[in-house]
Amino acid sequence: MIVQHLADVVLPNARVPVSMIARLDMFGGARDQDCVHGDLLFRNGYAERLLPAGSTSGTPWMVLPKLTECHVHLDKCYTVSRMSGVRGGLQAAIAAQDADRVHWTESDVRSRAMLGLEELISSGCGSVRSHVDWGRDDRPNAPSLAWSVLGELAQECSDRVTLQLAPLTDAEQISDPAVADDIAREIASKDGAFGVFVFDQANRRKGIRQAFEAADRHGLALDFHVDEGLDDELDGLEIIADLAIETGFQGPVLCGHACHLMNLDPESLKKLTDKLLHSNISVASLPATNLFLQGRAAGTPDRRGVTRIHELCAAGVPVVVGTDNVQDAFCPLGRHDPRQSLALAVLAAHLDPPFGSHFPMITTSARKALGLSANHVDGAAIGDLIMFGAASTSDMLAGVSPPERISAAFQGELA
Image (tube, rainbow, N blue to C red):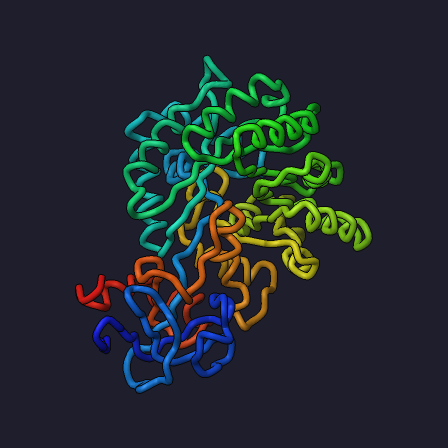
């Protein structure tokens, strides 16, 4: 039952994870493990504080800000069913996905991407960044068909979700300053982020530098696919950190994958994490795709591709979690749901309870990594919050109930 007092509305029996509160000293509530508990007061449509709980007999509600998906590929999703077979590592997946492009018509891309976007919205997302393959067969430096289609979807769905687009350019491709600048200008026209794939390209350092310089000129965030492998010679993350420091770049920088960190000894790892911390770089762990692609050998794998979440967090480097690929050549299973991705990261990287301490990876920290303002429960508008029928953060992360709009619970009173 929702209790209403004049301009105030109260959601009884609410729990809010401590990590989701900006001003814990002002928020009230009784401590309950990694949450505070009470009746959540909304004043003039905004969450203000917790009042002492009047009753605990009704449905327990876990209240969070809307989730953030920091890294997906809406142009590729739901293509695996038309592939004859997907097996092998990263390069095999790239080849299989490239072969599938014969099916990429405007209607095909739109229908698949919209399915993924609807899943994200229904999972409780308020902000999403999707990477989009760049270039055409006849014009490798021109915007792709998928870029145009997803740009249209971003506008059409802007009242329900913030969809940022990041073109997946190649570090070799953008080592040409004119190409990097032309691409950056197009990205800026769509309010996107400059995305770059960094692996072992000969001109990767030059390409990364051009990305920093073009992003700085056009006011763009940067988003790198980097070191997506376990080869010893991969060094893209360190190059990015060095150039971020050297150029003094002030925009947000997100580096996805960073699987190569698993190869570093403690001393080398500390040197690199110090650079990441100094350069304000965030790292995205993408467990589903990396678990499927990395460490492949005959038999059961004994090396996995999940990056060093514990060590990065301990050093103070912001770590976020993304879904990455869904039912395509890079990951043949899954659905678009940040909560599911965080749950997988918990299992893959041994992230221990209490789980509320990890929620910033798909909320506040994830938004900041995308260059958006952090979202907390206190001070948030009703429409920016979601609730789950869950009595603990373990229940919430286990997916015992779907997210619900808090405004729906008010039955039109203040929604």
